[in-house]
Length: 144
Image (tube, rainbow, N blue to C red; front, side, top):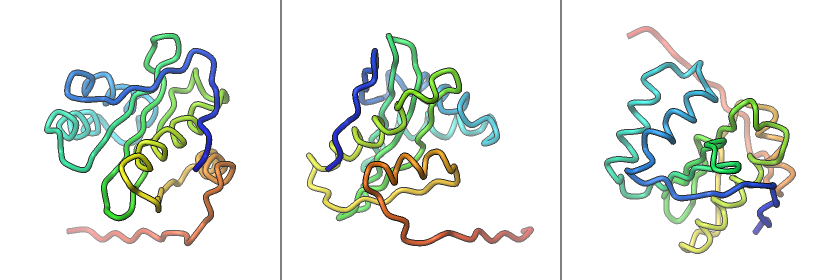
């Protein structure tokens, strides 16, 4: 299990319904290309306390800075929705958020994890934490 890297001023908290708005807006600010519906969807997931979904908000000196989710796909834990606001990038927050979610999943009995990313920087962080590439995904789409 990876050790959570120390990042000055970083605290990570579980984002329940009371933090759903802050969490979703932080994620949206990191990934604007996902569109504004991202805020509503993620907020609804967190507010609904959907079983098997654990959202985490990273703050630096109290300011929202990073997001990440842990999905229950028993017996596997899935990591997704990891983001870091541009002004906080390059400090190790993404690696800390990944390690924190793995530790949370480990405490819940997961021993195998998967993650998905299209971002080379996120892939590099995962490799640094001991992840290995299993396959590259090809997405298909067609008009309805």
